[in-house]
Image (tube, rainbow, N blue to C red; front, side, top):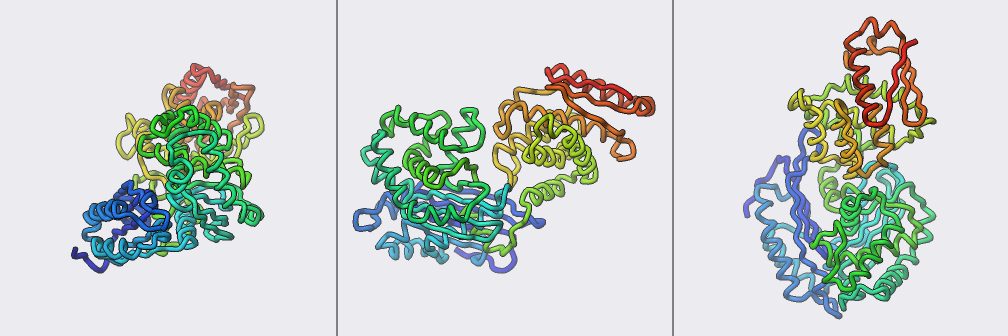
Length: 499
């Protein structure tokens, strides 16, 4: 295949994993990364390894056939903009050279078998570029034949380890009879703990503020929790509940858990057993889904970009630029909302997470105006539900969409109840403050915002404003009285008085 050389905004990363082959195609535009394509095929290469670590002919054929499909998407992407790596299964296979030789002929590109340490470094780099929250983190990636654990701060790794256990190899070793029994889970978890204990103490000594998971197992858990109406935090209790549900099903072929797709079902119990062992061995309180991992790490390594100190800010600024959002107005509303949050911080228990999410919602609340004024709230919600937003978890993005849908008119409580980033009472508090801040900044000038004293008695909000303001700005006063009725009708009273 002939490829163009020279300048091109297109890049591709291919990961020949032990369970699946993945391809990511991106475009670098206006200082941001735009995903153009994601392709994934279940190859289950590790399942083709025999006792002597030879890959079967069938497994290799599955891999080659997949790569023939990938070549279509590589057309016109310069070879220097493509990076292809192979991981644990091909690290292990004695006949990996044969597979790689044929694969390179198919792709007409070099393939590198990376070490477990290199894989962990790339995973951490991908997480650093795409995942928000605290910068001191433990990253966990359960692959098909290996599991990587990395501790670090910002883009600096403090310790990493790659262990020879994965959802495909654990499936073949501990669930080969396809029975989902307590004993099979026990044996799988015990074997995983034996691997983990060798490095657990030194890694725990490094410490971390948050734990993020960057694997198909964690993605499957997120899908299950969203479907079942849970919050996005993965905890040991939830893992044990899902294990109990799996054991009740009895056999792998009969595994049915609400939210678990058929595609992920085969390796879900084995991945779950490894994750339970990790939670128990490392005393993990909770875990969230990472925004990216190995493939993103490959892309950013080609771009040679430094890690942004605030990924969410980078994301929001890129969206503001793309949709011509008035940043001055966004900042004006944000400043007022911050003032309101400070006044209610104690009585409403507004924590940093809540105030941050309110800030980001406000920064994007006028995005719908780029499409239409009349239904701008609906357009804003739709766009945030479908835009790629590095740094924000799927649950956080769903919350932001729900907040923006409710920025005016009647409050739709059911939409707020469907998100799982915050509790419903917390989400209701944010939407009320969002609406009030937007309303008082409607004139788009700081000089026209009155001194606002806000307090709460239970769910009731009390706002006190100088009586002179009502006389000077009757249109604003009328809108404020209407807002009082809307909030009160939602069983969250808003009382407005003058002083």
